Length: 70
Image (cartoon, rainbow, N blue to C red; front, top):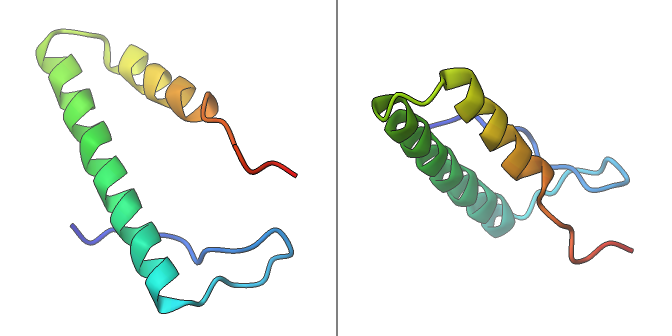
């Protein structure tokens, strides 16, 4: 899977340029995308509304908690 992910930025808008960090982020997002795609396809095969599936996936992302909040 070769998705084009954004340049990762810090809160001060400086670029995260460490190769290993960027590699980890790319792998994480590739994996998340595949899992979300699989969930969407499963839902559609089970005749769940596409819009409801998309809304549920958005709600899932919106519910994520930042444990490192300053």
